[in-house]
Amino acid sequence: MKGPDTDRADALRRIGFNSSVSVEGQELHVQTEVAGSQSLRIRSIIFRGGTLIEAAVEPLPTTGEFEAIERFVRDHHQQLLSALKAKA
Image (cartoon, rainbow, N blue to C red; front, side):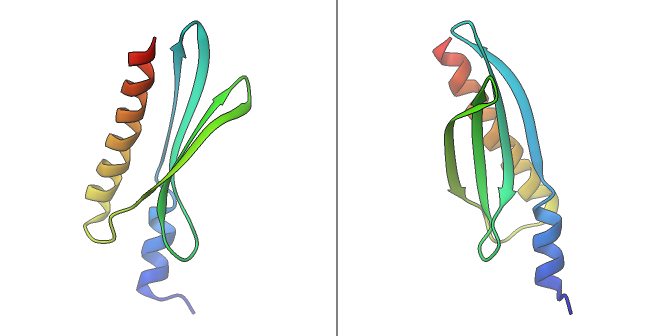
């Protein structure tokens, strides 16, 4: 039987953002999502031409309303995009 913590984790795992950005003439695809089974984390993955070129995992806040956590993950995704664009 699922409990409230499992339901919350399932809902949080549905948070994800996808973007494409051009860096130094190369198109990159950036995915940021909530992942994990025991402890949830923010996972960001960068692809070039379908090939994984970088991945990072960051802690996810364990408290807060769903909307606040979704905003936190979105902000993390936007910061990653900004950092990549700054390289261009």
